[in-house]
Image (cartoon, rainbow, N blue to C red; front, top):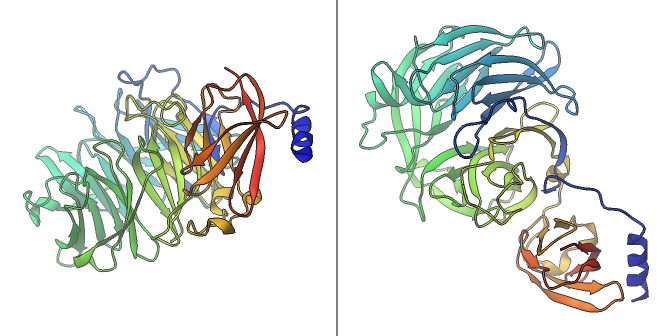
Length: 473
């Protein structure tokens, strides 16, 4: 008890710093809202959508490419704490969907908003001073929902040209400034099987096609025969929703994918070593109300997932059957878990890009703009076997209370989803509350506690962690 009171007296000499964004193991380097002069689209004021990144090797420069409601921003993030907008390319205005990918020094931009619309090709070689528009029109196609580039081929999901909607189309980028249509999916695979490809991850002409409510299909494009064939599928899986997007581990053994509809579906990890027998391995969720949107995989160890309402989550998937939370950053504090409010589900973090050489992450939030993040701590977090609670040294674990000061309830964040016991003491050492935290993200009611400073303590069988908690009704 003497140590507890000494600990409290030291706290009384400290002041708390204000915090805007809830986070764990991910540091905010910079935040931009270049589209802030526009009101946004719809009741949720959407101003941003997809994003990507590009490394300019000739000048050792890094860029964030940001889809916005009226065009595309090219932002120099070589100095990640002081990013600057290098160029802007106008596009369709009042646009909800805008996605982009890069090949060589070119950026290919698609939008799926209603006509009139257009496909854009941008030459980035003159960055950071400027960019030049190579193509801005409907010669190749008018609309695309998503885009992926593998080797020298461009894949467009939800492809619309003057002949109508195609589930997916493939173009050659042998001449990067003049794409050549190679194949439309319906030429080889009937619409009764796949009538829409919402998004696709492609590696070496193997296509992991997220086919909306029809599920996941693995396709192969044979460039010699100019043909698409089905290698396998993952359909009618438990609680199947709208198969939205996916990403493959480096070793090709596992695929992480998200179902967007209905809201609050889990993130799924499946084994794809045998295309004719794809097997579920693990499902996991950031929070019960969160809607995972776009996943990205780094090597075989980490899944970086953009989530509506609750920002960016990083999971350690190095042992696929035991997934653990490594870190998160909430880009949308207006709602979600932080506010315990999931009304208006499809808001917040749209996409991310974690592949720049520096390792920084670009995260694009529909309402709040561009976040430049450092996830070094998340990538180096030690994975703890959730079965061996007694082996955890809580003094070496980052346990975070948010918000703090707190009003009616406080959220407890820590790197893995296992139960912990907690106790809350007054400054005089009186126990005023206790219980069990079932998993990371659990909320504890504090409305019954008087205004003031308290000691918050969590414990396992062999260790404990203590920190201050301020109640401010």
